[in-house]
Amino acid sequence: KNQVEQSPQSLIILEGKNCTLQCNYTVSPFSNLRWYKQDTGRGPVSLTIMTFSENTKSNGRYTATLDADTKQSSLHITASQLSDSASYICVVSARNAGNMLTFGGGTRLMVKP
Amino acid sequence: DTGVSQDPRHKITKRGQNVTFRCDPISEHNRLYWYRQTLGQGPEFLTYFQNEAQLEKSRLLSDRFSAERPKGSFSTLEIQRTEQGDSAMYLCASSLGLVGTQYFGPGTRLLVL
Image (cartoon, rainbow over all chains, first blue to last red):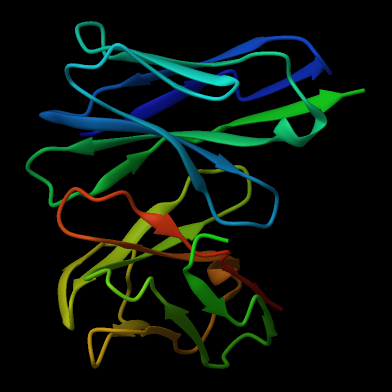
């Protein structure tokens, strides 16, 4: 069964600090991995997408890494801002599944001043 | 704003009533997806369309749920005889082609009393 697990479930950090969110997956055959940001009461918004051959992808202060051998990904947030407070969802797509996505449960990040 | 809109944004109904939600995808996107998301969880797949054809339905989509995309543009999701367990956020997403990024709408939050 395809699964995506994220850790931690929740995280509180001070404004300006860095943090790293983890994602482990068992989706096979792997197609791509996305990180989405979801503000409270809103739909998810794509931050990064990585295919099998990509190890790292950046989007501003967000940097995602992918290790396809260990089936792990991380999302690193640099110099956090209050607006980074949101849920971050790791989403994996399987190659033979018609772009069907397997979602992780998300990490709820709170950035405090 | 991702370009995907959903209506209504919030819906409160009594148990046993029928409700219908609408999703307007990005105009050139041929794929449209419906998801359900409960508090603190990642979205769960319900069903998807390619143009007007409904290609897959999740086991989560009971007989009380029906979705349509009559002209391959907007889609509706109807829930008949609502139950308290139907309370959730219903998300719509659209994509272009098989591997295009899915862009999510803001969601419709349903509360069944």
